[in-house]
Length: 462
Image (cartoon, rainbow, N blue to C red; front, side, top):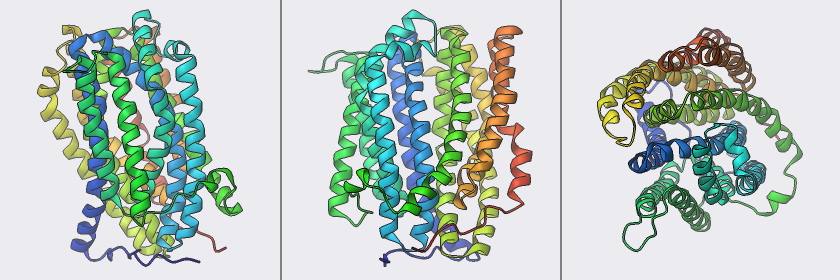
């Protein structure tokens, strides 16, 4: 079995300074990458908000199509990370190439299906999220222009994920950051028609996204050719990988897929509920979600880092160290969540000043939604790290599936729908109910965590 000499053992868990220094080296680039990606959505909302509230709301709802596609992508990437991190810790780079081939195959196949759907029947997709014809028309323009970006996203996001697994987080971050910066610049040029560029409005935001994805694709190809990144073998897209790799990939990915669509479908229902409460509620919810997502970059980066580090320890057979590292990540996630809540509180006045195209009613909704985000992100940080990072590192992907589906579909979504359409509660009250999910599941998450079923090596010998 081929061995990669560059794979280094993670610092001893007992050496706190070395551990946190190595953690920062791994996690900070990932955090920055998530942060920059969130800025793209923020720039879309900010610039379109200067045009009018309808454009902002239409693109926000059209963006839910990309969110649904990302549920598929995240399924494949989580399954790949479960296997990839442990085989990386075991120093089996040839097997890692097989994992990459399987993940890439399914990510690009589903991306092609979304590309066709967005180009051929965008109105059908938009009617899922709103009945407002003006919002539907705006969303159709966006979807037809952005369609090709979905299949590109499948390749780009999969390869960037494997760069993180192989601890080339800085290279991954540089590529995605260049893409984000170019996307934001093109947003301004194409939305408003600055200089020689045409004024395209909503379609300009979509074209900027596609062009930035093309650039990221080119940069990844250059990186694969010129560096020792895990190699992408085209033949592995069409030929089956080692039988046990394909079997293990779906063993850990299938529960994640059910979880992703249980959780993601529930989150999408939040947008559906808000979308049917009017343009004011939709616009406010869009901006609040963008602010939360920008600040939550740290939480997601921590979860990804936990998955890679603990997975690597488990794959190397260091089970006790992995167990203690899990406890450290739990405590760190609570601290990160608390600080993130304070940051959202501090940014609230600034966020209220930015979307100038919003109505006074929408501004009122936004203020309360941002305040709710201050406490919501604490639970989000904890659950992202444990359910999305620690448990999958040891192959435990079923618990998240069960927990998220029950919490959202048996508790939060029914309560939110009743509050909005039966009890006719105010928009702010509906929004408050829709922020309960992270806290409803914490007791179950804690009980499952202390059983330590996630502490296991799942790699196989050929």
